[in-house]
Image (cartoon, rainbow, N blue to C red; front, side):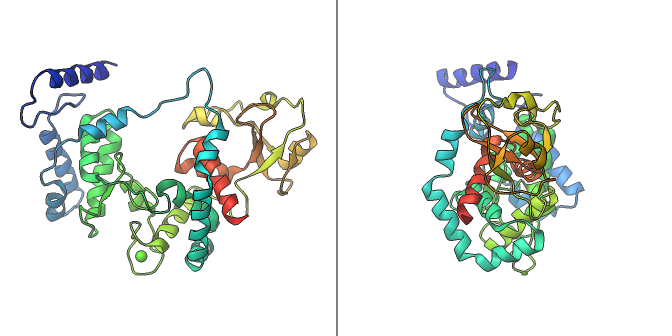
Length: 344
Ligand SMILES: [Ca+2]
């Protein structure tokens, strides 16, 4: 709050008086100057083995980007106590006919590359394509923020310094592999390429799908598919298990009676909406019917996001893997449903 009002006061000041050259609207939580903090980042990159040439080309002329900070602060927080926005309208805008047609085209046109990723990592092609569609509209919208500038700005500004300084150093290491600063552009928060990986994720999980020795997630589809699939395998995707199945809840069934009592450590507001885990057999014994069969011993949680009388799903552990990519029930449901549309 203090930061926010300080920011507002500085913004007002900049409206009432002409800005001096180099005047930045934003400032760091600890008052350190951007240039001083950039020297700290550069020293750390050097200490971690990044070449001097890379450090210089990636940081030349770097200034803080106020727009990045504004966008970062404008991120919606947790839902209000009034409840969660409805899922159905979100699905109708995100799993629309354009996106379904786009996904089917990608699926058709890249069949052999997708099959290779599916076989190597055990992750279904349609899930890979659905992630590609959600992250960048199948590669059309990858973002054009200078990643070095965005990450240096967010690290310097300091509310999540640990996260963003680490990502800045990771970006230097990505650049050191021979990617130019012009190539290293993406979202305001540092995600880039077709799968919108953060630099640290790139270093850990980006994969070479076409065997040329590089993981080019910017323009190479085989590499993009392999990288997304590797992310999913790493996050624990179980081969052969669906993400979830539409379920029919008998009238009068009280979904709330089976609410989970577990408190998730990461994004609890997302997980608190799911029921307890039960096997498919147990759910069936309670009267829940499945649209498609799943083995009786599959563990699943019941999710009826929009309340009684609206669609419900039984979600498996693979749904939680989609949440690892982006922890939002809206995102994960949308990815799962798009994947289903792509192959059905
Ligand atoms: Ca490659």
